[in-house]
Image (cartoon, rainbow, N blue to C red):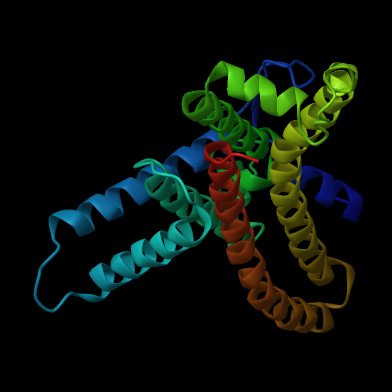
Length: 267
């Protein structure tokens, strides 16, 4: 492989169906996201079943710390009343964090194992797939619309789309400016899921690409120089990237809470 072939190979998904078709499925994205999600459910269910009221063990401490951390964020950002928001925020934070953390797995480890099993491609970081990040943000978008209609009714939802941000007292001017308000609010609503998904996708895709470029050092430079640079720079970037994957999970969670809080509030 040439360096460009190596990079291109690592950026191709394991796909079922025609790659150019809308209905093509990225098997690796679906597999790793479901496995990591199931892992969260299993571990937290195990912690709940084994919880003790006395001196907790290390894992129970970790689970309680995560729940308290997310609960604090919800209380600070969400001003409505809903039993869904805190569990949703906890799920989003942990799930996105684990999917992001797959970027810390050596870039050739799992793809090489997959190659031995007869799979030509394998991408192990689900959040580098824009389809997954959009699916999550669109889910949040639908929840925003659902809670807006549930709390404010169809009339309140329509009023937010047509009477904000400009709402003059004159009836004629109000009717005249409604289309302009509708256009602004539509752009504002659509920008939320788009920015939510592309922010997560862009940061993780860039991080994955840097790991791939660092892995090329061993192949394009003399072995001892490339190996030293690969090991040292790889560890430095991994430590820095650990902050990025945590921050991106936190941002996705907090913005979800904020958007759902706005759905419960009047302007």
